[in-house]
Length: 190
Length: 294
Image (cartoon, rainbow over all chains, first blue to last red):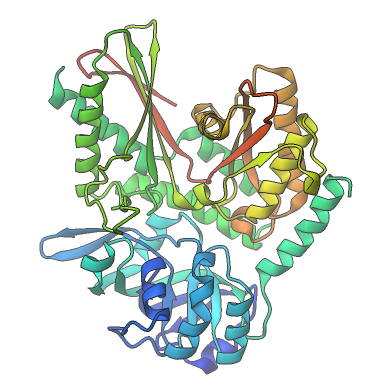
């Protein structure tokens, strides 16, 4: 398991290879549909995403005793952000995207071009991933986007994931899609 | 109707459904884990989801942060006040959201505003059926957005799939749907399929398959055989848990059928994720739980 600490520099990230298991610690930002569209369309980002990780996640958060606590925080399906991701990686120098299900060609190319990787966390392992979150250090856009879509600033310790798209253009998702397509053809007798 | 009693027990039903993975699903995941090579990505995924289920149960937190659409399937006696049951269920959902068993998961499609209580025009969803018994049966399926997104409805014949209007055509649709999903919708999950119906009853009946036990088979011999065949053939696709590659892409296949119009032959395919959150209870008229289901 490769340990990575924030800030996640281009150099650190370019060393990673598809298939490698990683464990992240330090600052991680959440963002999903509303945030990605907002940033892509030129919205001002309230945090500095440079050398940062965006976690495609809408956590279950409860506000009690003057603070937010995380109850559940597994990944959401990343492909919905495909049309926005490459531009955000480029403009904000994001180095790590964490989600599930992988991303498409534009993101794969941006990862190579700008030095970024995609990490697959375990979908639905929300309670486990919540335990990797040490603290909720801030939140933006709760009023505008709602709690699930807000930009949560988290501090994580040992958040585990697999590199499924690296900065050399390799994608495990693409590989499996092609292999399973061949198998499907034979099951359908074509 | 003893509102407070009903509300307390419906809240408990929601809490269990959200935090406590049913035994048959957990057992199926453990069996799937044994089939994967130690050190493989698939093994790591299944180990994590099994551990997650245990942590969620112990810490009393949602198994998955996408607490999904809340589908209440209710069987009620004649003359039962379904409006009253709907009202207490909505109150229970609101409380469950405040307590963190449910995420603020209900978005106004026009304004984009979030309904903080999860109570809105179409949330939660209620399906009532009148039955001859005196008890009230309430089953809750929490169906996340990920698996909802990978559902699809085919209209046969489909020349692209070489699928004719027969059960082999249904098989082709099911395998195509699983391939298209590539493990999204959090494989390994369960397919719910309806052959026939119209575009709305077809999808509804495909989701009704999710109240079945994992171990059951269709009463219709041809459908039971097809359930087995699709399960077997899905293994060959090698898509695996969460699409990282592996032996198990599905935990089960459940097929139902409805009558259809001569001009139409729909195959509606719905997915449930591995976090197959479905629970239920048999209630007495006062809202007391006689028996927990599953």
